[in-house]
Amino acid sequence: MNTKSAEILRAKGISPSVQRVAIHDYMMTHFTHPTVDEIYRDLSPIIPTLSKTTIYNTLTLFLEHELVDSLTMDGSITHYDGNVQSHAHFQCSQCGEIYDIPMPKTEVPQLDGFEINGMKVFYYGICEKCKKKEI
Image 1 (spheres, rainbow, N blue to C red):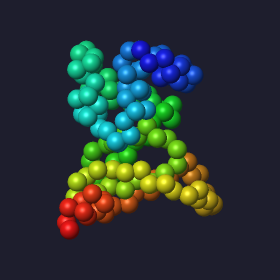
Image 2 (tube, rainbow, N blue to C red):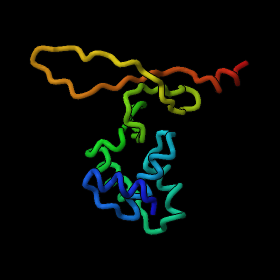
Image 3 (cartoon, one colour):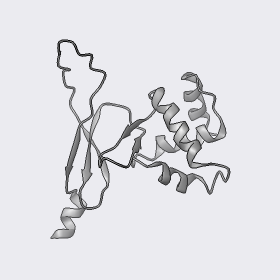
C-alpha cells in the first residue's frame, strides 16, 4: 500500500482501502486524463477484485474531496485529472489526446446575483505530434 496516498486520503477524512489507495496513486502518477475504463484496464491485473463501479464510486468520492477533477471535453466521455491546480486543457481533434495547458491566474468576474464556484477552459485543435505527421 502506498503510504503517501494513504496519508493524503486520511487527511481528507477518507478511509484508505486497498482500492482507494491504488486509484489515488494511479491518479497521482498518470496525468493522461484517464477514463474509468482505462483505470480499470491498468489496475484490474494488479487488483483482480476491482470493479468499474468501485473505480467510479471512488473517483466520485475523490471529486467531492477535491482530490481529482473531471472533464467531459467531447460531450460524452468523462476523463479524470489528478492535477487539481488551475490549468486549461487542450484536446487534439485527430488523436483525441488531452493535454494540460498552463493558465495564468484570471480574475473572477463579479456578476450581480451569481456565485461563481469555478471555471474550466478547453481548447481544441491539432496537437504537435499530429501536425508533424501531416508534413
